[in-house]
Amino acid sequence: MPRGTPSFSITTMPTVTVTRRLRFNAAHRLHNPALSDQENADLFEKCNNPNWHGHNYVLEVAVEGPIDERTGYVIDLSVLKSIVQHEVIDRVDHRNLNVDVEFMRGVNPTAENIVVACWRVLERHVAPGRLRRLRLWETENNYVEYERG
Ligand code: NI
Image (cartoon, rainbow, N blue to C red; front, side, top):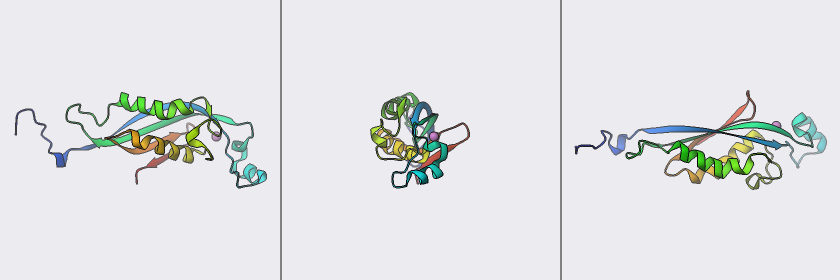
């Protein structure tokens, strides 16, 4: 083996998952227009408040891939931070998720629906890594996850 060649072969190159956490604040209202106002009120209770309410969201973005031989990284976490900041955070932070955010148009902004919408936005931007998991914290106690199946 030539001097300086890493001791991994291509076939054994470890796949590693790296995660970056970012925060945003946003308003929303849970409401399904296919249901009556009373059904929405019964289903979503205070989250159906017509004049919105807000959350301090935390989004954790996990990217998997082989370790790059030159850098030793899967993806530079400062690069990942910039991608998520540009593609998601700048578009949702201090916005109303029901009315201000193009990629949430027509979507009832539950944490579940937000995390799937974020996945669709981010998926194509993390190459050569692959999106592995998104975790969205809506409160200190509640989070949802969406993972590559
Ligand atoms: Ni809420």
